[in-house]
Image (tube, rainbow, N blue to C red; front, side, top):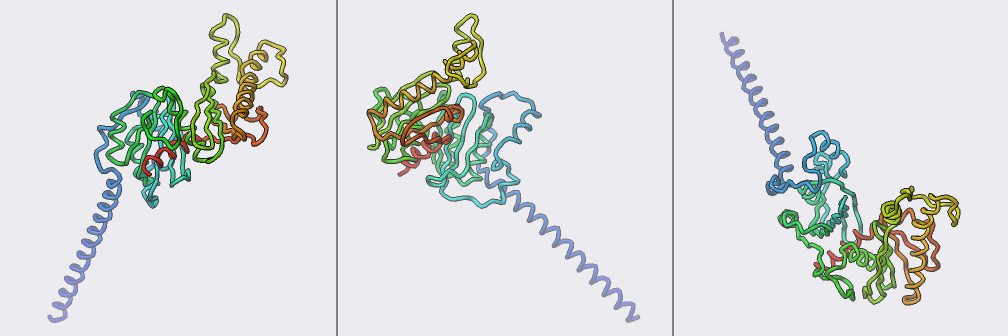
Amino acid sequence: MWRIRDFFWVSEGVFVFLCFRVFVFLWASLMAFSSEYALKSSFLPIPLDKYQERSTQKHKNTKTQKHKKKHLIPSLLPHQQLSLPLRPHMNLVIDIGNTRSKIGLFQENTLVEQANWTDWTLAELLRYGNHSGANNVLFSSVAAPNPALKEGLEDHFNVVELTHETPLPFRNLYQTPQTLGKDRLAGVAGAQALYPNRHCVVVDCGTCIKYELLTAKAEYLGGNIAPGVRMRIQAMHHFTARLPEVPMEMPEQAVGDSTQTALQNGAIRGAVLEIEGFVRLFGQQLSPLQIILTGGDAAFLLPFLSVSNPGILYQPDLTLFGLNHILRHHFQ
């Protein structure tokens, strides 16, 4: 009898022990799940649904949106970013253009990460800024002011919007600062940040070719604006009855032996000679003069340019460096 009773006591003890172990396992799993959920939620301190504003093409179908997500920079993917440590004292600059936006993440004067976005939401921008540890944000937009964008950013960061009233790290001698393009201001600030105490001319080869002069004493003298290469090609086709729109290719010979090469020489070689001519002209006023080439067509034009000492420096991210320089100046 005693042996049978002992057997039941042992069986009951084993059963209670196993139940306790199962309870502990379930409790630990629940706590781990709750911690992971809290960690993910900590990056979104306020509801973001009200900020879901598409900059372009708001009514795309779900399949197209999922396809676009694949082209976002890796920092926007939460399952990849959550395991990374936050980087302190980061600046985020946002250059919002007509067809695309360019962002740059800086640690002091060092460009840590940059990317181009053709389609984005404010929620994605906030998530990226929070995950990357951004403290301060400067945004510049060629479009009309967007109060919702500024309000959404201000809920998370110290925000500066670049306008003609924003304090600049250089003296602006332009007679009509309220009409001066923000991209031109950013280019000048970028030249000052990367090549301080030098006479500089920024040649921005984009839709228009823009020339900006900055002295070694940090005085912005102004500049010139001319049609860009693609604009010249398209204008000759659009404003004439029979001239074709030719591909953007430089002919081997300076004298065109066909309508196509004649148009190409006029547009492309003409732009090259214009840049070289302006550089020589500016060099008579400021010497030695550092030439800084930037813009979407800069890489295409660079091999055809012949400029003497000190030569040409190609800087594709000049605008981002300039925006960061203005942002750092603002908070200093």
